[in-house]
View: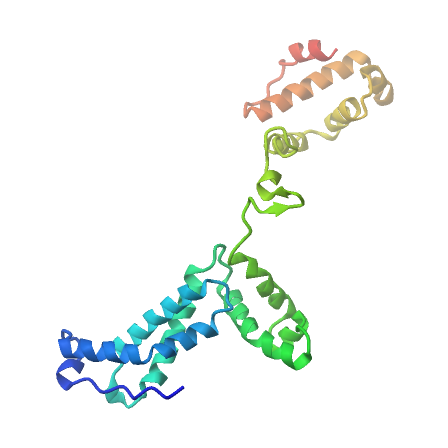
Length: 263
């Protein structure tokens, strides 16, 4: 491909900082942008394997080219291509970082993923196979665990839809539904917290009665109490739990109704 002609310097009347653009300056900028569109396309192609649509990256690269033309100052003696390529590349990188992650990982993982995408093909050609995470870590100077995390964040660009098939059904079908095992999770957690506040004797009564399904008579024989004592103690424990679950202070003398129910 023939080398683009060097950018022509802007007239002094149009190059001053802060001055309003003139028609001549606008025409020169348009001409430079058109003649260097291949720079934007080249940068866009280098990022085409990073996930988003190639056409989107190309449009962002064109935007970076326009910004480079507007900021270029020929009086500094730097060739336009040398100034434009970093500007276009930076614009594409910002787009990939800020706009292309559905679930955005930390910045260092994004940058590391970019390094891996650029390094992996060359390593695969050299090794004759895909490089392992350990080999990538050694090549890039990162810990293997961090490299694995960067590789895993690939799915954060375009996570699978909840309607995507998974073991014969969609992800949405695996979420909580009425009557599922997770339907009463909050209640179970609240009950566990209330039970943890009971004394060891009270916990043992509940365990024997409702987990081992022992009768009150059997519990009394094991603990050296009468059936009536077991009934009253269980009633007090149930009332205490009820009060705690409802956020009410537990009071003594509230066990008569509960005692009648479990006796």
